[in-house]
Length: 286
Image 1 (cartoon, rainbow, N blue to C red):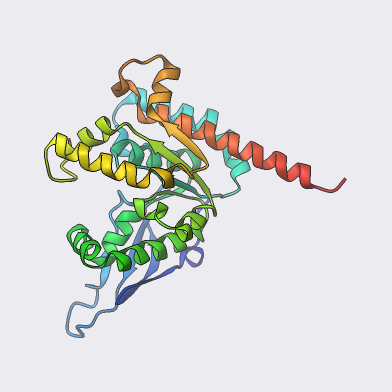
Image 2 (cartoon, rainbow, N blue to C red; image 1 turned 180 degrees about the vertical axis):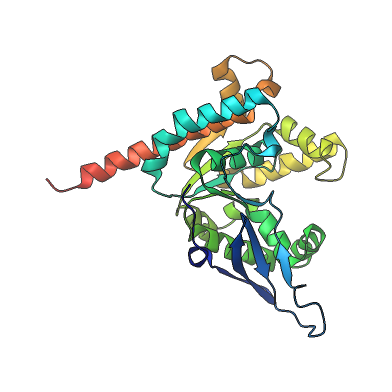
């Protein structure tokens, strides 16, 4: 597997009142280094270890988040890698993939499996911002007290990620909130992972990602969907759970798996890279 060097992955994010660097790359884990105002504290206390869930690189194994212990799933993943990834990886030439849409386990699982199939690095942009400002609660407080500053932080993170290659980025809603951010997504291929509201709300409620009852969460996610739908629609292609279910002849949307969605994403990527290649060839002088 091709590995990126430490120097290639160096990046600096300027956030309000703080900054951090990608300091080193060891064992598929990135570390962030913050300025430490307390000279008497532990010298290593300003190193924040990103959760492997949020930053990982394929090592040829099946991500645990999609059931690594299921032998049939292992076979499916290998088929994805052999049959599809080989067809698109060479034409991608390291172009990054950005996933937009409402937060869900299907979107995150697709991102991780897609990164594994393409031998790409996986990032969750929301989690990077959260890590930078001190965790989910701190990020929530930051967003509520300084919305503009929070969006600027998201832009800085997206700017750095879009400057790199061979990434699958699970992007937050901040990625579709401004022309600047939408332009940054153009540095790669963007896919709208369109998951029905019922599935999103049930997912978030069962996993307790957000507080509230199912009806409350569904209403909140519905409002977010309406707010960001126009931004989602600027993506290069759509991976729709409902369309995949219809194509596969499945009446129950719960029967659509992460593997099904990953194959659909690879098909869409293959179409986009094929069109791009045709355009480039047509533009060549005779």
